[in-house]
Image (cartoon, rainbow, N blue to C red; front, side):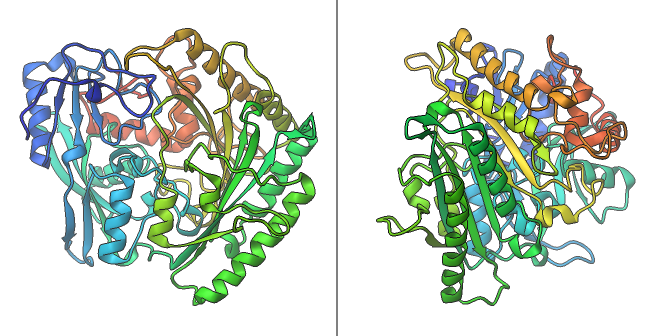
Length: 548
């Protein structure tokens, strides 16, 4: 393990500038091997046993949406960035598996899988997100309608867990493990993330089971001005746009799975709403490049006519903030009726196109919330969304606030709700509530609390009003106490949100968050597995069952 050096400001802050690890005694372990991780945990347990728990945290890509890692309590940090092993290994009665260290980021993975094997994974679009937490939290991405979730492809894990008798030790668990505890760990890690159980050091994938990279992909975007000839876009126009988006891009017909899109319902202060879309030509489609080009032209033409009939489309270029973050709309095509200077679509090879959409955006202060929906939004939800997006708050800038609606379902929904820890297997659209802001001139650890409180109040209030009919949250249909006709399906674990439940004062009970993330049955099973495999409560935080 590289010699530890004093923690710098770079060690103390992640992607979200709201959070900062300001403990003056912060020690950062920088492992480059699995044994280094074991040694780090042994050192902490031997020298500072009272710190085991929420004072010890794991970091990788540093994209945690809450302050679970970067906070005043964190005294020890295990940074797995250096775990960058890659190769193949054979298991008994199993074809060759490719292994990948948990320190890689999304873009590293896409390049290696494509360039070495011609394969890919349906992971996230933000290049700098670390595989360590992303894959095990669900691993959703823009290819998921066509290929499912990344957790559906994980064959096994190498993970360092704490054995109460022998202390920290590394073990490999796979779907073919013979010990029940190993099978439990394998099931849990496909959804719960690494820190609840231990430190994931490697992922294993069966090469022949991985998706073959699409041949080509095309991108385009639609946009509308909030200002319609001096009048703000009406609530009915807004609702009609959302409904049109849903009917085009959230269709569960298998022929549509190669299409992904996101409706960026941005705040009125942003001036424009957007809808980027991606069309893939799957590797097994037998559609020639020329045929694909023609098909894309026809699809975009039809979508353009439908959208333009609702609200006239805008030709204005602008950045598309969110996930993915696109610095300029023109980079992915501008869909407009009639002749325009910009092409309606841009065509890419798979890797080139993935890089084009691989933006994380600049590091800012931000707050995120999430929701799964099984059906189109009802009128009360749309009214609450419109009200929130057209309400300004004195003293804050909401030009980077939005509700992002991602098309979902497809192959993702071919897996049962209890086969992995992630139970949302019937949803058709996935929402990311987001707001971002900056604090120019301030040091990394400084924050304008007045601005932060106003931003949080705006997004939390809108969210609670959208789901007012179910108590202010998007209830999980996998809870047996929930009516079967509910249209929501909880929240996404990789977009953690303490305001849906945590151990902190002023928030609902932590059990509510776990119900929303995992549903009743999966939540109960995860709690038992975490207690058995992590008896000392390593890496706990304000939203885990154990908190020591």
